[in-house]
Image (tube, rainbow over all chains, first blue to last red; front, top):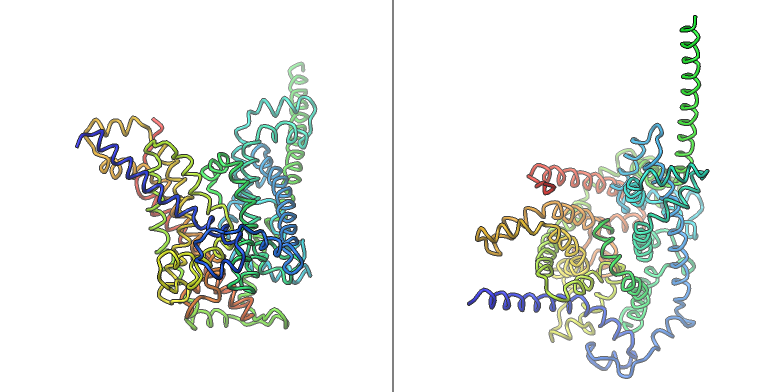
Length: 278
Length: 312
């Protein structure tokens, strides 16, 4: 076999394998969407692999109408994500700037402490946090959902610090000579040149808080502060077997993130490899 | 006399300038701590304080309702003697052993296929990451349907009735397979980045020396990928030891005969169902220590081996 023929056969095999991978990756999404668009009658009478005929939105109208009220979980989740996002970005920028550009006693030790807290897993803090929020009378409140995250994350601070250290000193001192104070320097100089890393952090924060489950599960009870993940889990355990409705719920939970992902796809891929975000 | 005045004025101006410098330093310190105040408060209250609280809770008895009671080391004795925690640790270790090698191998394999320069590779790479950005809990619910015995998609596809999640022999491998499906695209992404950063002149040189694709992979690419492999393994092991959401959705309550009772789930059920906060705190502490040890050991093991400096 000539080298070029061998190369072509290998390419073909590679394509086939990659295609199998793509089908395995996408199939669960398509299957759940198909089921969400089926009537419960069709789902009960035909194989689960059959396409919806006719396509119906009845599962979604049921989900958002009277009996299940999925409006509230969507609104609560969006509010939590928005508040956490603004707080985390703002407070992380402030801290990162101090670590990157200011000299002060205790800087190294404090930064080391911040980094060390990256090693603390959520499973470990969940029980003491529950005890603390219960003692403070904040269980099952909006504050309980946002407070642990809103003051900035050590991870975001670490990434921003690296980025801020690369900003040319001339830019900062020029702004200082023009009479800017620290906050003005941050707002007019540092933030505009840091747009790429801020966009990355925005995506990370939105995705991870939209998907958050364990903390809302522990700290809320009842429908009032149910998040989308929690509402989906509860719907599944309450209406086990009512899969058309449950798949409508998973679709609602997944689609906004998929849209975000497809719009910022290049950026997300780069962010993941830069930051190893989780 | 003249020299004297010169000296004293120099001294005066130097104290003046050192005064100014000290003032500037004080102001800078003040600014720094003002900027740090919110995150310092957040990190102290929600990350550092909880560690002290978990230690305190581990020494007490609490059922979420009645007052806290000092228990000494009773919780430790109970957790270490009743075997349930040890069993959860073992289950989690098996889960990690099922997930990590397969997802790392598959990810590396997919990455080598994606870096052959075939058209459409970048689209596929993006496609593979889709599951990673979705909530593990929600994907767990989707897979619970797909794997359900009578009306699930998988059994319909293969035309057999298999109890993927209810059979004690199959539940843990099924849960591991779903986890691999979720994460393999993420792992692939890192290996693609690692492979594309290998300088082409090295691969060219290997080709000229007569190395085939197999040899190039084992002798050149794999050793050069060590930092990527390290990162993927460490983060993979640490997150797999904490797996909770997907297992909560797929096999709640520890699964059939408790075969998927992983550590994070055990901690949750011990605390919020059995209402034994003290024992759950002990488990959380032990898990924390274990994760720190794993991180340090992996760090040591990898730093002992050679890494290659490509900067020249």
